[in-house]
Image (tube, rainbow over all chains, first blue to last red; front, side, top):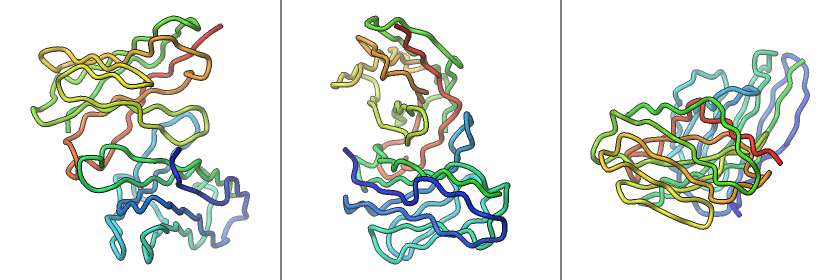
Length: 114
Length: 112
């Protein structure tokens, strides 16, 4: 079983609030990812990181930001939440090398902005 | 990256084999075929991957045609817990292929 954790699992928050979604992994993986998925729709990569102090934007443009100060931690922040940010956010990690094919996903955070 | 085409949905009777097809006619020589699945409201889960030979693990078997333009994921004895969306992804191996692009996948419904 993968050791990747996301908190909170569910969050309902009002418009304009600043929120941070937490993601941590204990596998020592250098690569980490954030995906966004609306109900019944495709997953879209919004951010990724190759290691400490590395962050890149993914295929889908997002108003969120990420940071990678520690290998095990990859938080996602929304400075001012809006209803359009309502979605599920999934964090994942993978190692370098040949085993990089396997991404381990967390359980997700379901965000609702009212 | 090579594009994949999968049926939108499939049904399977519990206890029977589930055969999920995937077309990847533009696959290039160094690209692997990966399969993931996503059970409702959970994060995707890696199932299996292969290059040209057929592969089997404790979860499933992967059959790749000789021309590599299509493949089939086989769940030999489907259970209700196998109900999920199954994604077929084609990517280069190792570090060059760490960006996974999830398409629509196949929604497999296993029925009692």
